[in-house]
Length: 153
Image (tube, rainbow, N blue to C red; front, side):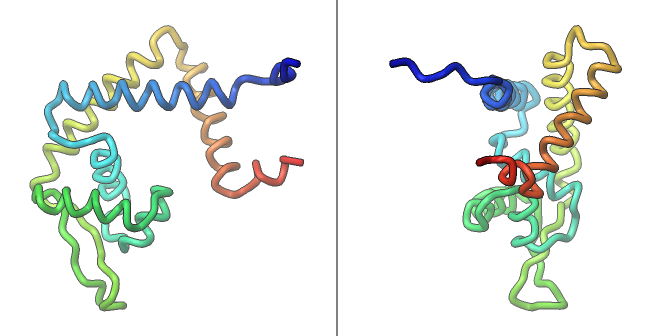
């Protein structure tokens, strides 16, 4: 007996798109020669957007385990792109900031993002792009706020 056909395939489509975007972003990063993995590039851009966060808060914002983040931070610190400093408010915590060396790398990551975005959104009108971004933003907010879990029975 065959299982019923799903009412909507949008969830699986988004999972597939996320996988394809990640693969495409990985390729784009090699074009701009950052020497970073997708995870390291993602971490670096999160730090750029949220300068001076504690490691634990950064891990939470990125939705990764703290120990996973430590590996990314170790690599970025070894490359001279970030620095960890003791939080004056809590000496057990570390604050994460970019170094000046990170500036050109951030620019290259932005170039890779623009390349992938251009390819991904080709053929869409500006209105369609805006609507899609709004819908995806709502979906992300729902998932982050746990609203999606309340709908499951």
